[in-house]
Image: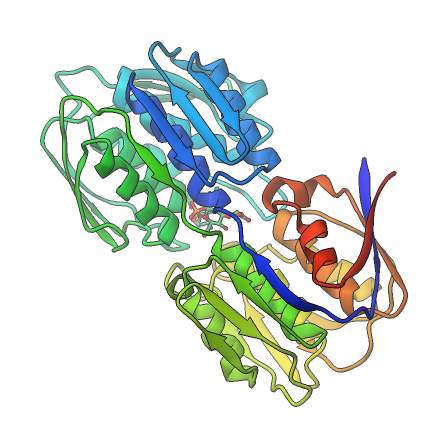
Length: 421
Ligand code: EPZ
């Protein structure tokens, strides 16, 4: 096991290139199962999650080659079973369910477990596939889908759940519907940029889809899809994480190779606190502001404030000499970082799904435990500003979703080292 030792107080300055999006890469890699032709996906970040998805494609029978950020997939013959020992390590592997259903009409995918941010149900995924005429059985921890040609066809359905739209649920239903005869209308579709990126890739493969990036997606089924090439969009959550780092300590940083519009909810929130941002075509600059004001935020589906930035903003609130609140509506239990930040002296009061942070007091370095991907990144941010040494244990959480986070922070001036536990 590895841990990250962070020596707080080192000022950040300079520029950092943001990597391709993890949450775009995963469903797009799964979508390559929809054709027997060769697909080339570029700017796939080097993460354990994407490496894992590459492995899953291989185990399903696809030929996969990976050279730095480029993944070439040829899924000529594929198996219809994605077993538990593959799916259990990464719940996002559920996004092979849609393409296997669309391509093979019959498949078995293990139910993903929950994770520390809360129960991770897939009822909306299954509801969507059933609306397309698939018969679904869930038993023994497996999802068995049977979508015989005669019953599998386009339909109108609504994917909205009690916590809003579902990103991977929308992806799965779209990846099945693109090969279902007739028209599918998905109301309450997720509108995240990563969903839009998947639609753009599917269209390059020959799919007929309208409404990319909106809450209403219309799909005209086609007989088959062909190979395509695609470059994944930049990772807006990695970008937002670095903006928080640049706002917390140093002389200011610039993040490059980003799509600022994908980060609007985050940049608007930072501006409202009083941070001055310079927003270019593909870059954003930010610097600390000692007179920044607190924020009151609620996480929402896109284009609202992203749940994946909630933990990082809790860390940011610790350096703002004011009271801030953040309410989590997507994953109400997603506060594993709070107890760890309190070990560093953070003044955070958790009432239900709302964290109230009184910032301003200096944090003290301490050994802390990483839990989920974004909570772990937030602990690194807290370590950057804390007095003394912070040890972030279970670094594998960070390696799941951030490409070389420690190297990128070190290049900006942070003093940290990765050590084997
Ligand atoms: C995606 O997860 C992201 N993961 C998550 O990012 C992100 O936090 C989440 O969307 C919300 O934006 C990937 O894209 C790989 P959801 P997903 O289905 O699709 C409920 C990260 O840190 N729900 O949009 O699994 C669910 O419980 C990760 O990169 C149902 O009730 O999330 C949640 O409350 C963490 N039934 C809400 O909807 C369902 O069938 C949103 O979940 C599906 C979801």
